[in-house]
Length: 97
Image 1 (tube, rainbow, N blue to C red):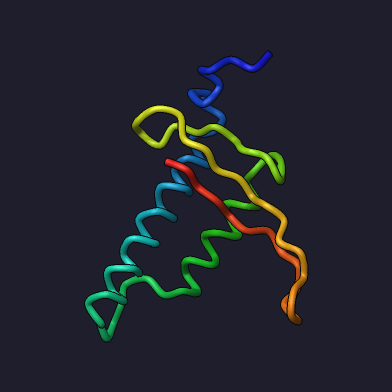
Image 2 (cartoon, helix red, strand yellow):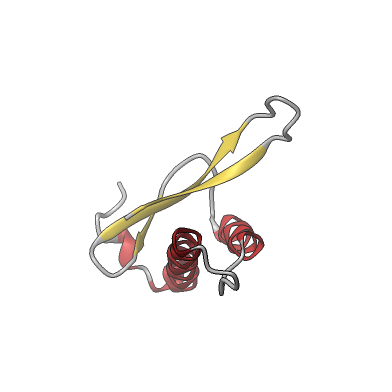
C-alpha cells in the first residue's frame, strides 16, 4: 500500500523542479500573450521542450505521480492521446496543483 507521504521522496526532486519550471514558463507565456508582448521570454517551443523533458522523467504513463510542488501533494502525469484528424498519437502532460 502506497503511503500518503510518497510525494516527499527525495528522488522526485528533479521532477518537481522541472514541473515548477514548466508551470512558471506556462504562466510567463500566458502573460506575454495577454500583454501582446513582442519579445516574450518563453516561446511555445520552449514550453513544448519542457513538457517532453518532464514526460521523459516520469516513471509511468497514464497514471498520476504524486509530487511536492510546495503546498502539499500535487499530481503530474502523461496521458495517451490517440491519433486524430491526421495528428499523430502522443502523450499529453497534465499537472494538478
